[in-house]
Image (cartoon, rainbow, N blue to C red; front, side, top):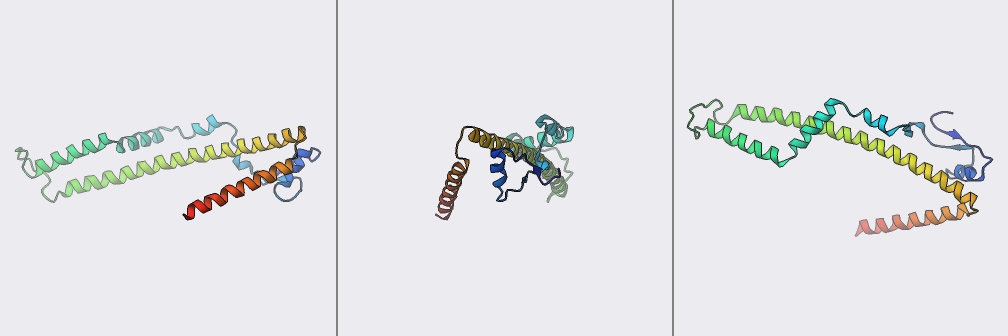
Amino acid sequence: MNDQEHTLDLDCEACRIIDRADGTEDGHVGAPTSFMVADERAAFRIFRKAENSAADGITKFAGSMRFVYIHSVWFGLWIAINVGLAGLNREFDKFPFGLLTMVVSLEAIFLATFVMISQNRQAARSDIRSRLDFENNLRSEVWSVHIGQALGIDIDHVESVVQHAIQSMEAQLHTHDRS
């Protein structure tokens, strides 16, 4: 068995129906093994590293109003001290505040990096969930066909009704998108 197809036992009528779903009755169903995730917990353990947790925490904090308030106070104090309004006579970054500009630029670079790390992590989790959804949908389809066949339900008729319903829904979506 290779990564592209799995051979079916065509002695079962339900399996022959599933086999015909790809347009050819050839004893193979195109189900890539790369979609198989054996254990969801094992897949998520990959993403539980300390770096990812730190990136998520920083991203969460940077996306909060607390972050905005702290930075507003920080910028206000920085400017007040450096234009002499604080009465401290400790001006270390004269107008136009080159040091402040550099610090803020570096902070923006790091925050953008942390956000991208968090987004990549969430995308990887989403990919795992998609694979699991695919497996469950495929499992449900195979079980449904076998149960329908065991109950004597005309599986081809049911599939044609499903296809008609999908086409009708897509037509409604396209009509809705145009308006």
